[in-house]
Image: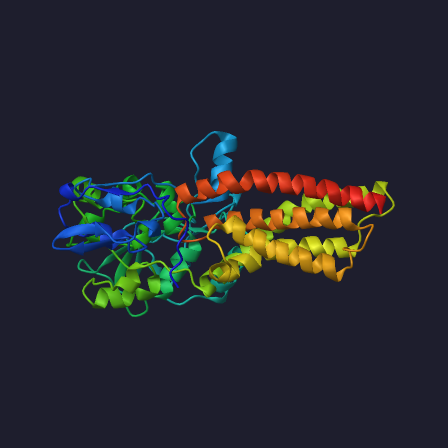
Length: 96
Length: 347
């Protein structure tokens, strides 16, 4: 069963004109958001994106942008309290 | 076989008995897990000693690797290391273990400790280019959020191949000439996956709720024992609902927001418990209402925290969920607790 989280929230944007068609995005995405057709990548299902940032970081053409981060409530709460970026910090024994 | 170099809790220095023979000689690792390894794995699943369950970063050998053997890169969380090596039976390969501070590959990649700079530094430190003739590294796919393959190629001269998500697919991946099926590339979140995560959720939730039970105990000291074993059972049941049952039943509970799923199960539980205990009776309604407000809020909060353990929630989504759910949870919990306590003291 493929689980889908909230709709229309992912910040993923893909600039097709920059794409070199290397297929790296499809290779690294853990949820099959990207697919390759006619030597160009395309976004199959944006709502499956969990904003891990793997595609953007590994794209040699910088054709993908996403506000990457951790989808973890306790990390976000801790970020609010400490005023820092949300991160899965194991010292707290919280998430992951 | 030399003992595995592990890091102890207090001292992070390398264990002296591990690699004393020859610094150039990468420690040989076994592909079978001992009873101690299994026990250690079980303990960290229950949150015991999880923060310091590490192996020493560096280069390891599996089987009899030579200059043409593949190089697999991984994290120094011992549970990760053990999962990897038990899936390499019969292979000759190198393991390059990065210092991820004892965190698994995916979470470490999110924090960039499983990252581009650490990988480049580690390649230098073990002088990998002098050990192998090829210039290929096999990274776990879930390391990709932390590592930029184009940058590794540019700065270190190694080309990154992203292997499968699960270590159990590694042998098939290698023997097929580094071809991964779509299934190997996709993260799942099966019942089994969710089940192994629940002990830690339960332990953490139980720790947090100790303070609540402390307050109830204090109230019991000063008033004429308003709280009894029924109250305890109802509260403990709620923690179980939020930290265990909601994660396990996740895809079957209506709604998409985790907090809503937890709230729904929490409401079912609270209604059932209050009904069975006869608290809907006249005169007890104030405190029944309190429980019906507070318990689902607690379950919602615990379920919301499971977003961090799930494999498919985006930060934008979690933020949206929290902005709506958190104020409701806080108000509901405070008003509910107040009503319950007042109702108890009056009853």
